[in-house]
Amino acid sequence: MRCVVAPLLDGTLLTIPLEIVCGAADGPRLAVIAGVHGDELEGVRAVQILSTTLDQHSLTGTVLLIPVANMAAFAARTRRNPLDNTDLNRVFPGRPDGTISERLAYVIVNTLLADATLVVSLHGLGALGTLMPWMEFVDIPGSIGRASHTAALAFGFADLMPLPLLPGVLIAALAQRDIPAIEGEIGGMGTVDPANWQRYVIGVMRVMRHLMMIPNSPAYVEKPGYWELHWVHAPSGGLFDRRFALGDKVVYNQQLGVMFDPFGEPVDSVVAPCDGLAGACQTIASVHPGDPVALIWSPSQPRYVA
Image (tube, rainbow, N blue to C red; front, side, top):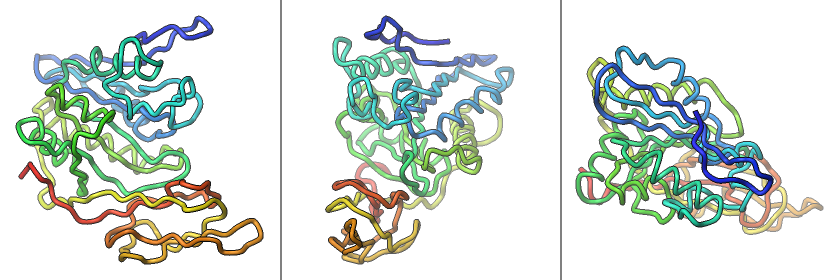
């Protein structure tokens, strides 16, 4: 099944592929969406696998599966939609009369996800880097913040990122419409590593148990780690000699790498902005000025959820 978004310049239609799995009994409405960024592929594969493994006869409620939300970016193998050079996850909830990405965002929020009980959005780092798994939730007062936090604990990732209502981000736009949502991150480098997409599949099934959509008792992460994200950007272009590994403990002002010019001369040093863990890194050594070359997690705590 495909949802039509808008006609394009050449007369073809921009569409969103989707599948609806209806259970044997009424119940919650879970939506699982991937491919918001076109070069983040392990979530795409996880949703494809879910479409073949869900048993509607033992399912209570309905599952909406969206394997590729941003088809133009997926076809171009890029993070941004090439039709308007826009990051889809910065323009939610969109506009019905806006750019093509804004229209896409509007249809996703106001048509496809409008009646969801819970939304799970699956992401990754993209083609140029890799990261350690984490789960984001909206850290806001009230029932939506609590429901998002509980769903994040149910998913099973031990490391959680409490987020405020960030402008343009899908889970924030949904929270403002009283829909709890969580956003996962895993993998990268344009791969579909089975170890990663299987963790996504297992996580979604755990959420379904939490919602009592499938048999078996739910389970929750008992001692999660809470973190704040600090992206580190290249001060200049050149060849980046990385001096840390994914998961390393780092301290404030520790050298993370050195930038070399085309003649092999060091031109800049990249340092850690805080104490924490190296949660992500760019794996391509050639970098442009401003490229995100590292991500440091610093310990944090939610402000509003227990």
